[in-house]
Amino acid sequence: MISKIPFDIKLLKKENIDKEILRIGIIAELDAINLYEQLADMTSDERLKKILLDIAKEEKTHVGEFLALLLELDREQKDELEKGKEEVEEKLKKA
Image 1 (cartoon, one colour):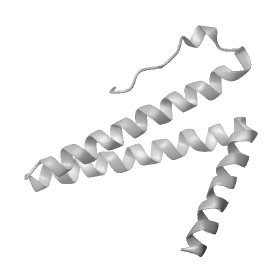
Image 2 (cartoon, rainbow, N blue to C red; image 1 turned 90 degrees about the vertical axis):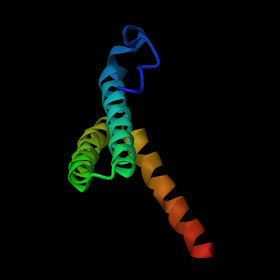
Image 3 (cartoon, rainbow, N blue to C red; image 1 turned 120 degrees about the vertical axis):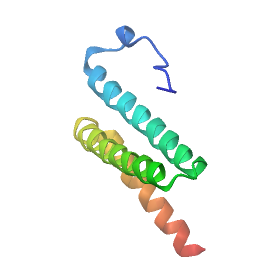
């Protein structure tokens, strides 16, 4: 894994551990997506490219799985994610 856990998980409050585990999982999956897509761009072997992109797509599903559970556990995260989406939609309307 390219990313590293940026803190000592033992220092977290018990009620935050699962949310942080999910965020670490999301970070790891995003790292994997970037890696596989970059490797796919580098290869000239179409078979290898196809496999790498398929694996990257699976990792995107994993991000969705982790995010779905995180949004159930962290109401503030859910609210802020929705707020961010609304801000983007509003800015795109003005463009």
